[in-house]
Amino acid sequence: MTQTIASAKDVYRFFAQGGERTPILKGLSLEVAEGEFVCVMGPSGSGKSTLLHLLSGLDSPDSGVITLGGERLHELGERRRTLQRRKQVGYVFQFFNLLGNLSVLENVALPHSIGGRKAGEREDPLALLASLGLEERAGAFPHELSGGEMQRVSIARALAGGQPLLLCDEPTGNLSQQAGREVMELLRGLCDEHGRAILLVTHNPRDATFADRVLFLVDGELAEGVELCGPGIGVEAVHGALASLSI
Image (cartoon, rainbow, N blue to C red):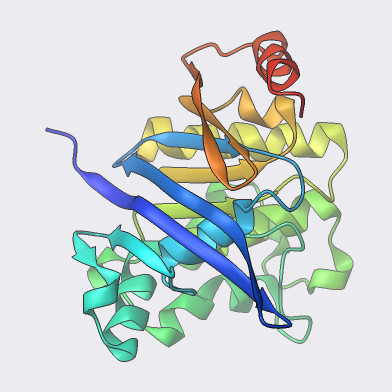
């Protein structure tokens, strides 16, 4: 039976400013199963990044329950919550977040130095680079790489710790269309061949077509009755759903 790796149940998150509270997420519920590729689409400011921060334990909801790897995060102290995040979650960001003073290999090996999963559950950094076609770039530094290469290094780093869940925040936003497609094909392969769960947030309809499920976040809520399920989600279907929601 497939287990749930991360979930949000009736989650609210507010932004406080000048004594007023503006809702960012309003009663949101979501589940991501082991080995599932879920995409959440929505315009800028719709709460997509906030959702990722909540699911990883980087932020806490004002109400509702976040579960990660079978643990209710609100029941954990800060130290245990951090350990749970390191054990369960790898990140892929839009802006790569590679350390410029470290080589490609050293960047990928970073998760080994901060702990998380047991040594036998982690991935070998050099083997990861080889699997992504980057073995010959192991000694290079980030400024010597193309955008597509930097994002592949970022993905290798996210995989190095052996975490079962990847959270991807607009991973193709700074890439050409071709480089972006190659990154999405890589992420799709991680689900199909290695059983990694992926939660992708994006506003790019082409990226969404690689997912098993596409959900739509509008004004802090997941749109009811508007969900696309794969395999073979077409870009026309994504555009149609966006048009029906006027986003």
